[in-house]
Image 1 (tube, rainbow, N blue to C red):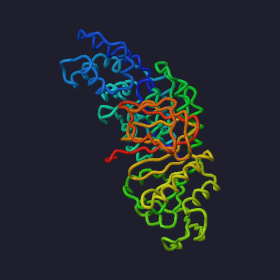
Image 2 (cartoon, rainbow, N blue to C red):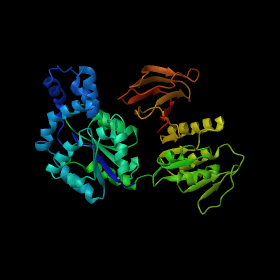
Image 3 (cartoon, rainbow, N blue to C red):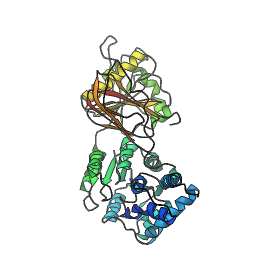
Image 4 (tube, rainbow, N blue to C red):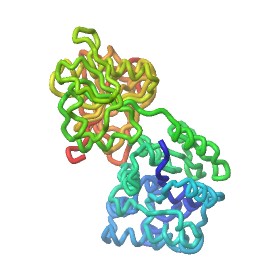
Amino acid sequence: MKIKCAIFDFDGTLFDSMYVWDSAGEDYLRSLGKEPGPNVREDMRTMSLAQCAAYFKREYALPFSEEEIAEGINRTVEKHYFYDVLPKPGAAAFLEELRKSGVGMCVATATDRYQVEAALKRCGLDRYFDAVFTCSEVGAGKDRPDIFRAAAAHFGADRQSAVVFEDALHAVRTARADGFPVAAVYDPSERNQEEIRRLADVYIPDYAHTEAFLAFARDAEQGQKRCVIVGGADIRGASFLRKLLREDDFVVYCDGGLRHRDALGAAPDLIVGDFDSAENPRLPVETIVLPREKDDTDTYYAAKEGVKRGFNEFLLLGVTGGRLDHTLGNVSILLYLESLGKTARIADDLSDMEIVSREPVRIGGEYAFFSLMSVAGPARGITIRGAKYPLENGEITPEYQYGISNEVLPGKTAEVNVRDGRLLLVKVRPRDA
């Protein structure tokens, strides 16, 4: 899949300007006769300007509106954006290379628009960017994926074709948890470099050494497609599920699942089924007709066929609801694919489902709830962090499913680790998602 757009953070990723914010909050509070607490700098790192203003008003009982506080913080730093801050060395040449490759570019930042635009124009980089998105205008900090989604939508790009360039761990976590590829850019202000290296799809030590990103971009363009399997269960919220599809997906419709092709807007690449619930449409598409008496369900057979054809990533739609036995059977497909080292998830109008086993899984704040259930025997050494109900070295068994309806803490990304065994993770979206 070709990369359509690059979404750049500003401070620390594009510009050497994190120093501007090192003492901004402390300077502002001291100008009002307030002594800053010991964690002000660290707390501000993950906040938008609006969140900082609300935090200062609440914690320091400031007699100003949040808008006035935000303006006051801005006044302490704005001279740097108008006169001082500079792009990271090599950034301009890298942007020019992306422009020549036809990649759209925008800025997504917690800094206010007028400061970012002033610095871009002064340094001659404004010509590279189609748009600037700010956390204040989007209405959420980078503890939520809203700003990345808005930026991708501007270019008509899905998540997989929109690369997020970030230097801060919390933003890297948010983007990755929401399915965006991440190019992490080194900045000395971020101490968690090893964790960032582990999470990012590609790591850029500086803009003079972007070979790894260029190789990543080539691999993305030539890379493996995803296998999407559509079952025959009822689909509600088809317009939402349609947004999950990619242009280059290999789409397999199973028997009665063909009734969803118009709602999903995806033509079949393969049709599989015994056609006991729908007639064989005899389309000019590869079709595998199965016997009606067999061990595998049509959906299970489709998953096996996807494995046989070399796919490593799977998305299952139309496989939940209706008959409980079918739903549980389809959940077992996730276990089958995970056992082969494949990436797989089930999505419906309410939730996303995947298996947690050897690798830690992170859950962003865009989900209303998440549940962990034992579906393959006892799971041990379970750790849950960043959630309302944390857990250390826990155990969940099929007989006692106590991991239901947990919540991500505000401003956090939850993380789940399992030492031994496997769990089904169900991430429940808000009703208005």
